Length: 165
Image 1 (cartoon, rainbow, N blue to C red):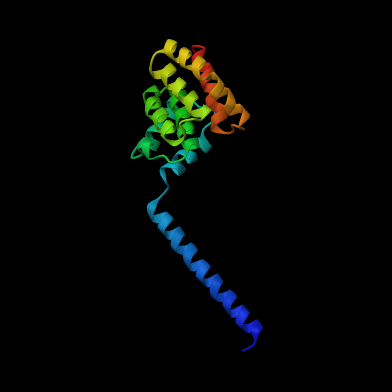
Image 2 (cartoon, rainbow, N blue to C red; image 1 turned 90 degrees about the vertical axis):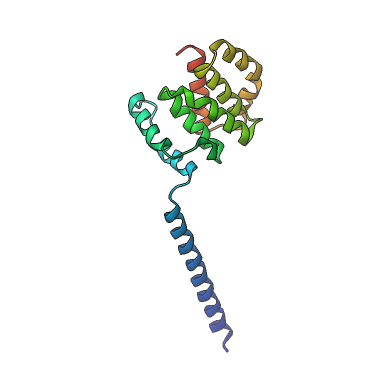
């Protein structure tokens, strides 16, 4: 057998196998629907800072229907959901989201900031200020590690709520 023909046959077989595996993966993904993190990221991508809190609250209600925040696997999704909850004045969600973030990455400045935000919005604002002072270096370190996306907005949201928004 010609080596070129054998190589082309092997490449065609490999391409067919890859296509088969990709189609199975896509079909499984379509059958399962979006993951909890993907659902949050979809709403986050549509969210704007100037959204009406009532409209954002309605989108959050739809998002949270059948979504347990404890199932989120990415800290960025937890942070995005927390920001939207704070902006929609759904403060009761924040403590559970702070707990989830702590479970995913307890030593991160974003996690500390989310705990402070939860306390500021759903707990004792004075205690939140004390927590902020205790965790300020951790929170500030977040900017040094290149905090982007939801983390950057979390810091802004925290500042607004600490100032008594």
